[in-house]
Image (cartoon, rainbow, N blue to C red):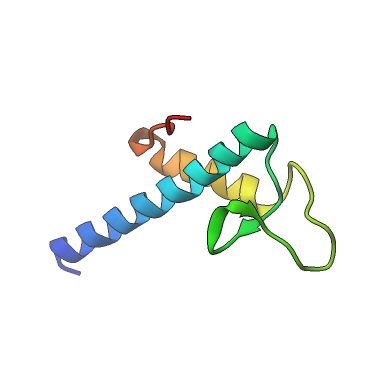
Amino acid sequence: MTLPKCAQICDFNSRFARKRVEGAYLNFKSAGHMFEKYDATDILRVGSGGEYDVQLGFGWTNGVVLDLLDKFGEKLIAPEI
């Protein structure tokens, strides 16, 4: 893999991490808790569907946000609210 291609991938990963963490943060500040899942097309909307109603405070979203903070935390800045 060439260096420019690697830089593009790293940039994409950083932007993805920022969008996911920022959306989760803004939702947390608005609702006072995390939701289990969010709409894949709009991180500011709670997800729906599946085998049961959307749950509060657990699920893959919490794990993904923690992993993204671990990997990209030094590059992320809390959004202005």
